[in-house]
Image 1 (tube, rainbow, N blue to C red):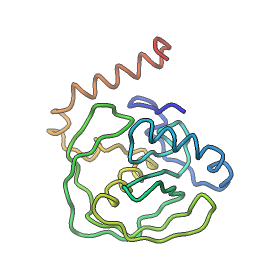
Image 2: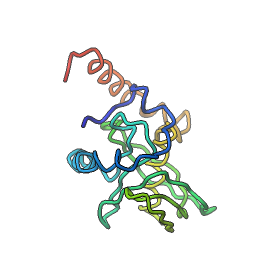
Image 3: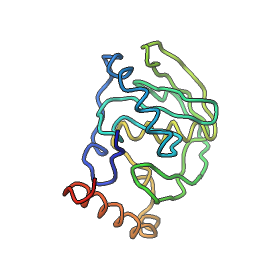
Image 4: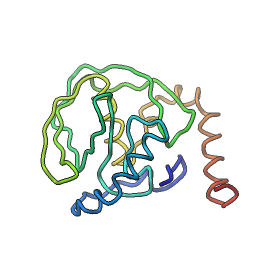
Amino acid sequence: MKVRILGDPVLRKKAKEVTDFNEVKKILEEFKTTMYTEDGVGLAAPQVGISLRFFAMDDGKGFKVVVNPQILEHSNEKEVGEEGCLSLPGVFADVERYKWIRVKYQTENGDWKEELLEDYSARIFQHEYDHLDGVLFIDHLSANERKKIALELKRVMEEYKKTKEGKEV
């Protein structure tokens, strides 16, 4: 399973709702291996070319699969924290996110869960949730902040073009 990088159109597509949970279960082990091998704390299906609404995360409390997520409520208070992304290798920036969120989602078996997530857990969830709507963390940055990382973004886009043209595997 290969992580798609900036420039790949699947990263900008709104993912479809999961209706066949067997489809998720079939790829779960490979998905988990990819996330940990790439040293990620989260991985959304679109990042590996699957345009479905699910992601996995590990906030230090273990591997969790999140299917068809919804953010029901969020704090007024926001926090700024550094974020990176497996789809933007080597790119990091400070992003403002809600301090806490109340969420509802399905497990890989289709069971519904509701949780209150705070701080780091909330940040990971929001970051991965964005992927399902075709949003990347760089989209939360001001024009000025994007200018600061412009060279890094250009490098990632050039890497994508090389890969796409088949020059690298």
